[in-house]
Image (cartoon, helix red, strand yellow):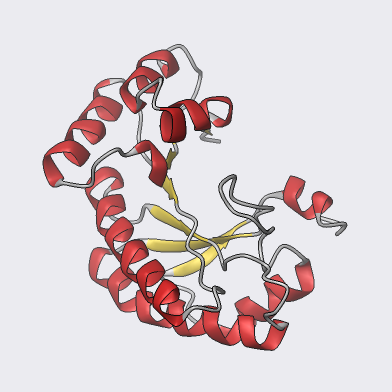
Length: 197
């Protein structure tokens, strides 16, 4: 079994406060008995190729792979322009995932926030529409979109739209693609949602 590590305790320090860099985390991680380091989109302070490649090189030089890029697109936003921007950003992160993790790496995808005014049917329809736009990009870069049964991105106002198992399964049923779309399953998030993992 291979294990990858994620610095949840340093999320704010790297992504928000910027009191620590992703390079600091990679250096600290060298002592961990893991094969990979998961990344979060907020760890990357720039998205130009030179910077992205320098992070990828630091990961490789430390003896790790980069198996998954954690992204938190908001595909349930009632604002159509915001959904469009979320698709564009996720497409860019698919490209970045390929540069950092190579073919077959996973780019995490969430459904979006559970806005009180958005019905389940409407939310599922918007999520399907957005992911359908991203699947050709995932195919082009040979990257797998991994839908996580997340609780809530730390910078969101509302919890994950598809946190509950029944909604999560509705989204999966709406997207038949299985080569470039799969599940990043977290049993602890199922428990938080009140489901039996």
